[in-house]
Length: 264
Image 1 (tube, helix red, strand yellow):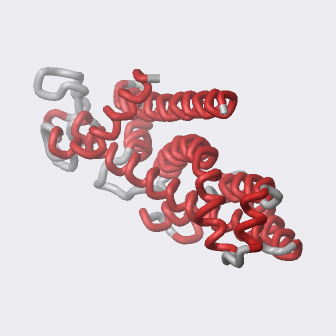
Image 2 (tube, rainbow, N blue to C red):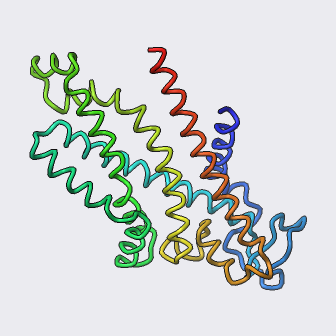
Image 3 (tube, one colour):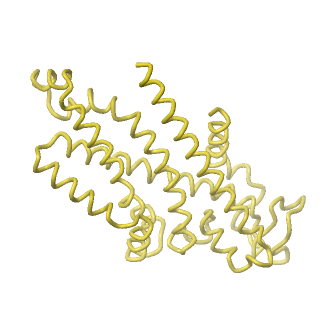
């Protein structure tokens, strides 16, 4: 668990301090040194137009991880509110909200994101909107399930009889019970957001050139995959290691919460 947290802290540090640690401007073109192998001057080599790959990876971490954090947190807030609305509303509200949620869940997330981003046009704003629209449903289902189980608890019934409003009950009694489970879901959705950003970037719907992002770096390196495969390996490794570390941290957090519940 400690090693996983350490690895995540390293990625957070790279996303925060990466631009200051980058040895070169990530958009600086150096045609004479294009497609160069790793060396003392360029530790990870250069790309097809001579840009330093290490600098682009460090700057790209801010885009890939920062956008994934924004998307996953926005989805968490929207999904939690929708789930609480279904749980606290009447049967008609619950039925209507969950049918809308099920409709969104019926479409594969990546396919729906590509369609939305394609309709809106390739831009960072379209990327954020497309991935947010397809990420809130899992939070909503978890929030609704826990909310319905809490409705019959004695302290919730007493709060209702005391005249507290539904949203006051949600704030003081529902949210403390929701946060642990939603945090576990959030770690998985954070990792999925990184993959989604990279996938849309690889398809040309993500962060637009010349700004570096791990998915767009894969797209740029695709043409030279056979001659200089390291161009694709470096951003691919960054995505794999980061997603794996986040998923492992989510598993460890879930196990820790399960042990805490058993002791309680």
